[in-house]
Amino acid sequence: MSVYENTKLILENIGSTTLVCITKTIEPERINEAIRAGATIIGENRVQEYEDKRDDILPCETHLTGHLQTNKVKKAVRLFDVIQSIDSLKLIRNIDRRARDIGKVQRVYLQVNIGSEPQKQGFEPDEIKNAIKEIRSLRNVRVEGLMCIPPFVPPEQTRAYFRKMKALFDEMKQENRDNIDIRTLSMGMSSDYMIAIEEGATMVRVGSAIFGKRKY
Ligand SMILES: *Cc1c(COP(=O)(O)O)cnc(C)c1O
Image 1 (cartoon, rainbow, N blue to C red):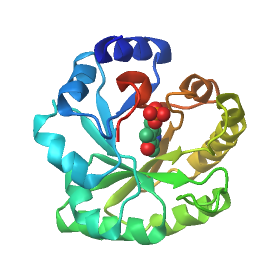
Image 2 (image 1 turned 90 degrees about the horizontal axis):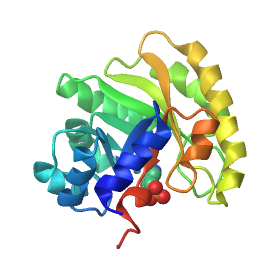
Image 3 (image 1 turned 45 degrees about the vertical axis):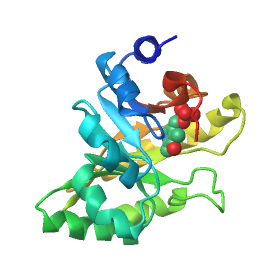
């Protein structure tokens, strides 16, 4: 099946859920095939890789889904509509400062380490409420969602993590006012996006099911 057909099929399967087409390592030509098939958002993991490809990619919304290093914040704020990978207060304060410099309000999601894995990026689930309290005073960021990458386990075992995320999402929506406007729950990838949707995802991030296995 072609990228075009894969994208069409996934869009059909997910209905009203938002698709982010994960395009790391994928050439612009193939990314454009997905956009022509109806994908409206792409997600990249590296600032530099996206900057190198962007002139050849058709108009679309762009999300950063990989860890953002301090020295790339300025560029990321210039290039991305949404930064999904906010994993510390230090990072979001830095983003707020860079966004203020260029008169932008940067849309962001908070990344949750839902499996509390020591090696993984993200806020601990029980840190999110306090993080939101700290972020409320920042004028140049708007928190629009939560994102997670659950532990690497067989697809059906991710369900429990998705369920936990949904509960956290519903709880944190109660905090919505000022620059906190949580309405997107970004979870589910190629192997488990239908499970994520069953558990309440409003956005899924799909790469290899569209483009095939990645070659690094
Ligand atoms: C690579 C990646 C995905 C997509 O993974 P697939 O299994 O190829 O669908 C989703 N989210 C993030 C953050 C990723 O890095």
